Length: 98
Image 1 (cartoon, rainbow, N blue to C red):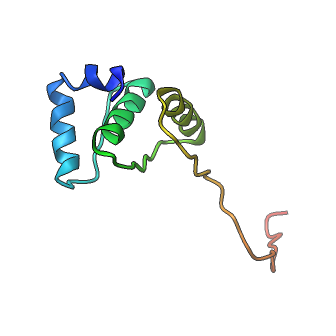
Image 2 (image 1 turned 90 degrees about the horizontal axis):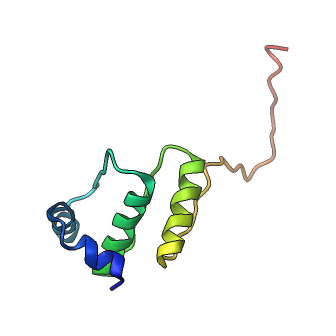
């Protein structure tokens, strides 16, 4: 366990969130914390229980920052981009407003 996680373990709020996660009470939400603090919480929860996390953020810029922060803590983070992918070619095009 990293020093970051050890420091966070002393917090009553972290222990409460950790207990909820261990009991499978999902989804969990965190409001009012800065991005780096959210990343630290995700890192500590994943590290503590050997869990994985799926984190939803408001936009792609926040997702990139979170991935970078998690990587800096030593957690393997993957970014799922917010792009709609179409595997079919466009068959119709509307020019109604042109």
